[in-house]
Length: 383
Ligand SMILES: Cc1cc2nc3c(=O)[nH]c(=O)nc-3n(C[C@H](O)[C@H](O)[C@H](O)COP(=O)(O)OP(=O)(O)OC[C@H]3O[C@@H](n4cnc5c(N)ncnc54)[C@H](O)[C@@H]3O)c2cc1C
Image 1: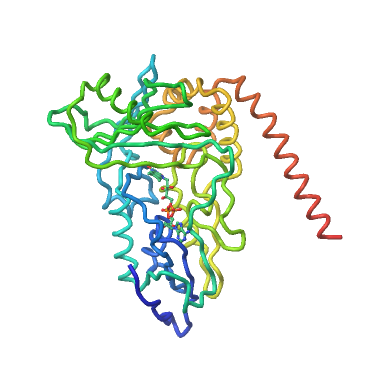
Image 2: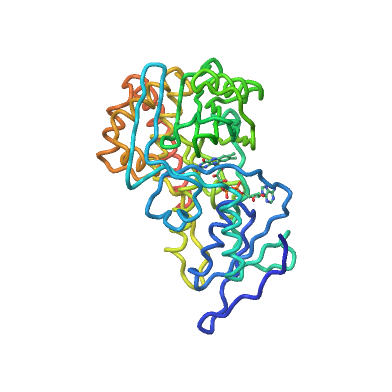
């Protein structure tokens, strides 16, 4: 990918505002693909191609703001399941199925659409004179943050072993000695599936831990020992409120706060963030980017993360309880940041009370302290 930045196109006699977007990942290319909808801003993507990512699957629930994505999704599941050692919970939704999308397919689809709309991809900022720089390069993870880390294999078996109608979002019947641990498995066909060993913990584990977990799971729960690994995917997603990589540049995507701290989901929130950027775009003005999560959601996420960090053994009960109290539509909306007050109340009732109350108190104290600091700073500025 390389090319020369195209001249700003003229719109109703006025030049479009040139905007450089750093990084050619999910957020940058999803934004550039919708370039036609921006009548007064012209994007150029800047990526040195020194940090190329392997292919992986993005999972998310179908939502109205993702209608433009569904033509590219690899597979959808109207049923999904959460399993703990003593409970199995099935959820389903007609309107909000769980979807899987290949990273490479989505990025090349967006790249083509962006190119058709006149967006260039260049290796550096030389010769560009942008009026605004949007930064989608990944933010740094704060030291000691809880991490979602995983290794997965896309495998094919020579006999029918998977049920392609149901996605397994979490199966906790695996080794819990190194943190919250579950198997996530997406059956694409009866013979092909992505099977991932995922942990929530502050430190990573050696690769053979995930590997053994996947092998045991396949053998013990699916009687599958004869298979070929077609592809592997690995990831580490910080489960925290992340600070922008460069405070002087407007962050977008993960660097604009799009990762939901409690779940690590980002794809759906990136598309939401782009919708918000588009709605707020004004001729001659820099683009405004907001975090796609409310302050309330972020506070609740901090409480949740605090509980599972200090009591990881509660995780299977928390997630199965969530699946028991919510129906499929509510569950999908909750994890896509669309929870109504009714859904929030159900979630709060589903949680074990004491651990959450004990985590709530320090959060309120912290919020009070932060508000106090902001007030003092404002008073200082007004003097
Ligand atoms: C293996 C894996 C699986 C995931 N699965 C899911 C999932 O199922 N659902 C979900 O919602 N989220 C998932 N995520 C979360 C993921 O972080 C986001 O989905 C998404 O990639 C974030 O998009 P982004 O544009 O912010 O960052 P990226 O897509 O990572 O893009 C950042 C860009 O910056 C570029 N870059 C990096 N460093 C530099 C540098 N120093 N200089 C210049 N450019 C640089 C990179 O080349 C890249 O193009 C997953 C992440 C991983 C790693």
